[in-house]
Image 1 (cartoon, rainbow, N blue to C red):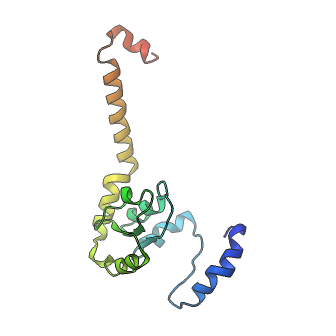
Image 2 (tube, rainbow, N blue to C red):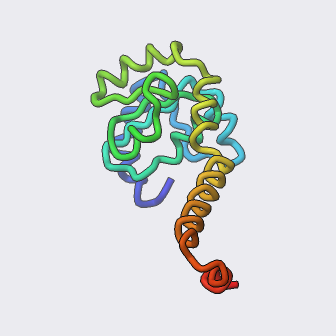
Image 3 (cartoon, one colour):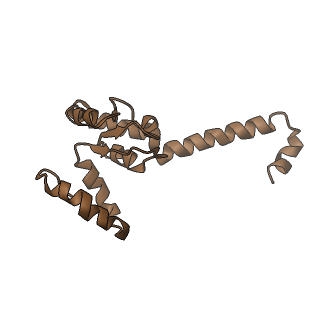
Length: 153
């Protein structure tokens, strides 16, 4: 835990955790432990209430087939497929209700949503398609003798 967060943990969070026998503070885990940890979870709770620009942990969970329950903020609506890879909620009460719905999601479909949208292969294919379209549109009306010159060749 960062030194800057220790006082907040001791004064605010630790008493809440210790008051609930069914809550366990795990702390930070090593990179090599993530797959097993996320893969064994029933769901990932993502209670972020600020405009998170992406939220990598959501797709890390989805890569393990673990559905996500996330507050509707920032990139959540772009990352989570409602009812497929998780549930998007707006209140704490909705988040609690969504926990009971986790069993209705198929982990294989969660993983498939990840593969369809977030793999390195998907990213590379998309970049190649975009670069090809840019190249084609730029050089389509060019004099063929200028193509190599314009492309730096």
